[in-house]
Every structure is written in C-alpha cells, then in structure tokens.
Length: 141
Ligand SMILES: [Zn+2]
Image (cartoon, rainbow, N blue to C red; front, side, top):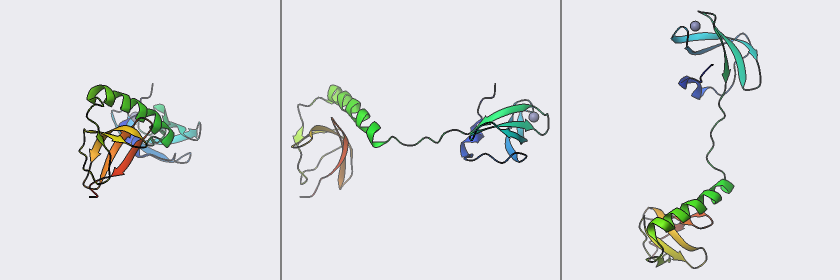
C-alpha cells in the first residue's frame, strides 16, 4: 500500500524509535512528520503520521552502486556483440599508441583483438573489447 515517495532518496539511516521523519502523507496529501513507532528491520520502520494518524511502513532503498568489475565483463561482451553487428569489423585500423582514434571507429589490437572506440579524448580512448572495456592511450606520436 505504501509507495515509496521521491523524498526517500536522501535517507540513509533510520531515525530511532520515537523520532520523526518528514515524509509525504498520502492521506493528508502533504509532507508531514511521521513518528517512528518501531523498527521492523535494519532498513524498514513502522511510522505514524502526526496529523492524521495514518500508519505506514518505510524502507530505505538500497544504494545503487555502479557495476562491479565482474558485471562489466559480461556487459562488455554484450556491448561488443552489438557494436560488431552495427559497425562491422572490416574497417578496423591497427592499434598503435601513436595513432589517433575517433569515437565510433573500430580498431584491431595485437593482444586484445578487435575493439570499438566509444569515447575519445585527446589523450585516451575507451575501447570495448570482446572481454573487457579498456582505456588506451593514443596520440602519442
Ligand atoms: Zn497524515
């Protein structure tokens, strides 16, 4: 019944029992102080609106962390397959740190094989290889 409101994003830790939390109340249709009645788990609590007395539960969202290295490997493979389909490997230039590579180009690396450049800065390129996304240097001529 209790949808998680937008304002929950910044809450990292549950206040103690008897403390207040400022949250939107669906019955009052306004932000209200909710009294913490009890902690159900480490991340969720039972709350009561101080104005209308409606009870609701509140759960802290788990922080969304950026993908781990292992997960990156899986998505690199998928990304690589997609790029291979859409760009093709025919015009891959041989990689050499003295060369200059633009985003959206393909390259062939002696060790890592064919890769697709997704980002290019004056010093570095981000290349999706079949096994991993790597940052390589270029423009070192
Ligand atoms: Zn209320």
